[in-house]
Amino acid sequence: MSRKLRLIKRLERHLRKHPNDKKAREILEALKAGRYEWKGRSLVIKPATEAAEAQQG
Image (cartoon, rainbow, N blue to C red; front, side, top):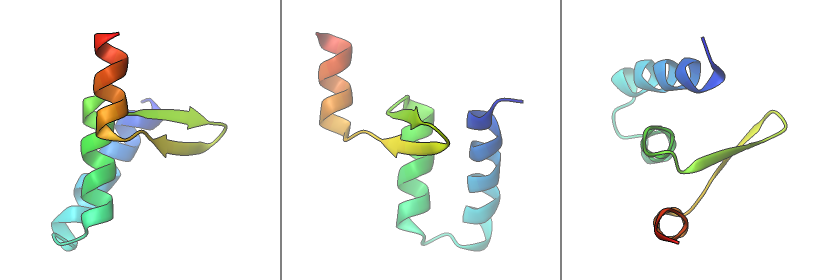
């Protein structure tokens, strides 16, 4: 299982116990939308506008 899928499952489990966690929800939505990149072991979330521009241009 990829790191992305493992992280998605972990965040979904976390959000069941903490439904108001805005940061976790933002990370989960970015992973599902493809607005992320790995820098070594760290996950970097791209802003929504930047990801939309990258897909268009």
